[in-house]
Amino acid sequence: MNIQTLKNTLGRAEPPVGLTPPFQALWHQARGQWEEAHRLVQDDRSESGAWVHAFLHRVEGDSSNANYWYAIAGRPHYTGSLSSEWQEIAGHLLEALAEPVLEVDH
Image (cartoon, rainbow, N blue to C red; front, side, top):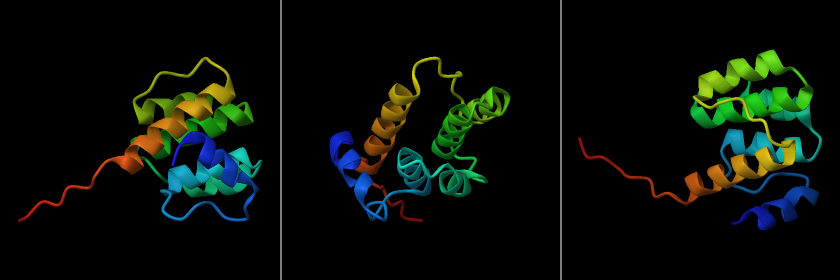
C-alpha cells in the first residue's frame, strides 16, 4: 500500500483491514470523523499513537494538548500544514506496516 492507495480507500465505510489503531485514527480523521479518530488513540501512549493524538489536537486547534502529546511521542511540535503532517504520519505508519515482525525464541 502507498499513500495514494490509502487515500483511495477514504470513500469506503471501513478502513482497510490490518491497519493499527493509530493508522485507523488517521484514516478516520481524513474522513472528517475526529471523534472516532480520537477514541482510537485516546489512551495510546506508543510513539505512533501519541503522534496521531498530537496531530488530532492540532487539527482541533488545541495547541497545548497537542504539545503534550508531541512530547509523549518524542517529536517536536509540527509547524507545517496539517495536510503535510498527515502525509508524513501516513508515510511513517506505512513503513511500519512494511517492516517484518521478528519473532524471538525464548
